Image (cartoon, rainbow, N blue to C red; front, side, top):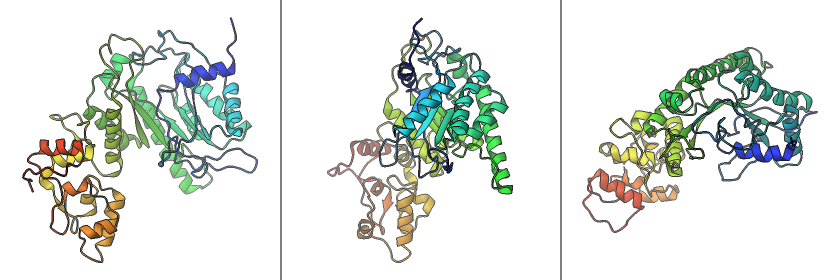
Length: 413
């Protein structure tokens, strides 16, 4: 049997990792040491995609794609006929350091299929981190995927070695996971998330008492949901995300559009999920995390799916058009940030400026506030500058088209 070279393993296992999207890298404060390599602090490592669109390099790879599970949606499922490979811990640690020294990467995102059992797989991943941290004195960013069902002790050990950990819930609903990944346990996934939250809280309390106490996951934990593999609604997805944020203190939920890369009787007839649906879910996720929205504000049982033509905040505003238009000279901060086209920066800018004078349309232009979408939901010194429309559906259609200037129907306002 021919031995697989390290570079061949790299090709196989980086390709196998491309469907795992839960690899953001901000938030760590791990600093370099005098005799070390790398820096996981905010100034030394950034997002895999930065806010201005730059690509920041992480080595994103699987430890192995040999898996004991046969999940219906996964390219690495046991029964799928694909090339298989497995790194040794030493091999992967050396590869990471060599790439880092050559400035190819700024950090490591390491995931894995499950080999033998969860504990055995976790021990191999931990060994990679130990070699990097203790032998190479590498202080750069490391994000690893924990294996649900692994022991609490192993989760604790990994959490003290890496900056961020992801425990993938895979699907929004427990019954769907049982159908499409029957060898995985929803309860084990949730239990592992709870263990991480408890350990992180404990570590934070210890640091308050003793500033040199070891840090546990300074960049927090994340998860990933596959979108569209089981016929789940957008409401199912964002309700689960809301639950995870509220109860398990997750930093991020990542959404991965289903791609039918393997044949399955359970996903037969389900095509590739539109990337626009994934984008709308990320927009809704932002509203949950930063704008005080609840999942049932955005969707409900009668309307469980986003209108892909318009963003979720605009969709919500039109569905609740009776509370608009808001007068910008009197609206509160919490009201302003719910106006489509306005965010926290615009809301603060408006509130700050109106301390000195009543704002008019010229004031907003001077403040460099765009009204392209917001004008349909606000009054400026008592005046409405938005599109004229006849119904909620009419306004959705018009906003989906952009900004038709010649539309002359009677406005509800």
